[in-house]
Length: 218
Image 1 (cartoon, rainbow, N blue to C red):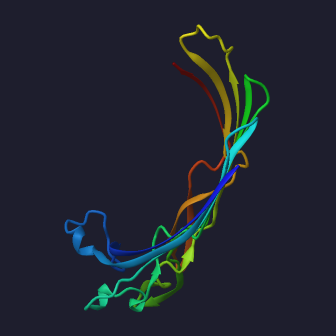
Image 2: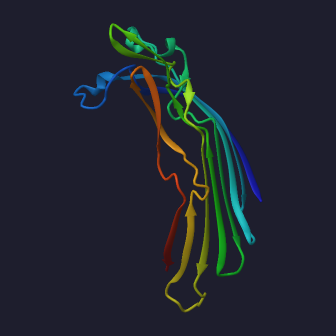
């Protein structure tokens, strides 16, 4: 068994984000919609690994934060009153677990677990009418988060006989991706209809996905 603990802190420059209310689709001057500002990133990472024996694998936990600040001369260049806010890829907690157990020389079981804090998102917090138009009021930039991501995978590997004179070694792999069938949202978006704000989640691979593969190596 081996383990390690690492910590880091880094000052960042020229992080890119966008102005509030800007449209990127079919925008001929998309560079005018972008803003740049400083940031900072820090965290701690823990790693445990076992590489010998019938049971092997590794466990990794990371606590990390990334913030940025957008503060300019003009009102459209100031986000969250010029204060630091979570970057789009700020995910404080991340857990990865990989485990393998070899029952015999030819039969083995593999397990994979992934957990991540949901990424930051800006939510609409109110809707009102202004001169006959529906207006949505949004929260501060990245002050909310989409639901956390969690996934479990499991697989069985069956290897062919180990003959020294064989040119290749092959094995069959039977696995199930997202065995719990968890609906992990990739993104969240909103629509206003008759003064009501409706939220939607874009989910990719929200059901268990079985796979079969044949692998060989020289």
